[in-house]
Length: 160
Image (cartoon, rainbow, N blue to C red; front, side, top):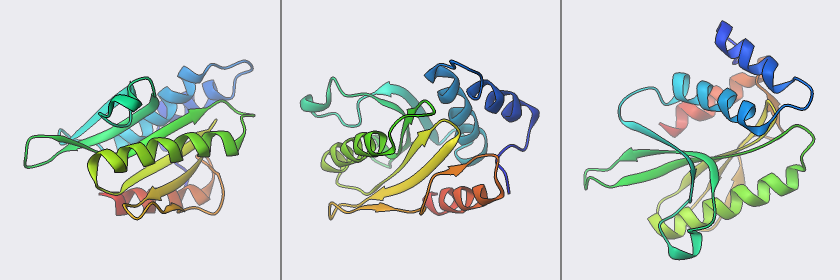
């Protein structure tokens, strides 16, 4: 089932596909879907353009956005990281960036983290474990408008 289930999502999707679109349109598209459908609620904290960890060596590193949840210790724990690139970008490049961000996050928190690499309206999902395993959860990049996007939904359901 497609992720384009509302008029707002369709409008945002079309903006991403406009000629010379900017990365902020892409961020608005994925941020909206993930915020409204997968991590809706007060317990989820979205942060944009923020380091993937609190370590000093990550201070200059930024990810598109990440999602945290409040632990019983009253500390925020990152559970999901998203890296975004415009259509035509190299999958190897965005995947290397998301892997680097996940590694920094896991090193900082000691917990597994989920991640998404997005190129335009296509996404590929990953998990980085405390055993330093970076596992692809989808075999390919899936466009949000395609029926195969149900696979994205299923993986997000497992994250929670």
